[in-house]
Amino acid sequence: MGRLRGRLRKLERATAQDLIVFELKDGSTARFSEDDVWPSCFSHEYERGRRSDAGEDPGPAHPFVEALRNAKPGEVDRLVPTQGTMITLWLGEDEIIRGERERRGPPVTERSPGVYE
Image (spheres, rainbow, N blue to C red):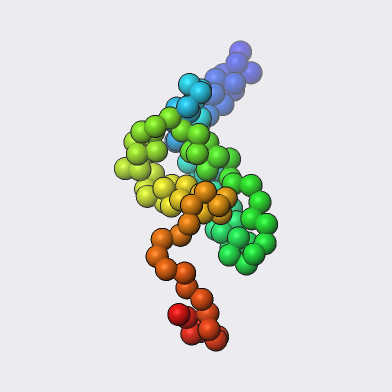
């Protein structure tokens, strides 16, 4: 009986954690723990952008960004009020890194250390 209670408590804890849930284009559902997404996705995408800016291979996007890329229309907009605009920034940067679109504004070049034109 004690083993069953332990399993039930474990299940209760697992379902109590905050999940980011959204539907994908193929009809399946993506589920990510907020505690896992925010520190790891933020640092992963920051490093990915840094590598891309340095001319290095940026590597693959974080699984959360991959899932957001395949989200059903309207799902990302639905998440913004609770997750913040950072998720749209990650998607935009992902498109720039993959060469699907250009950064807005005129190109900026460094003429000498600290002097940009």
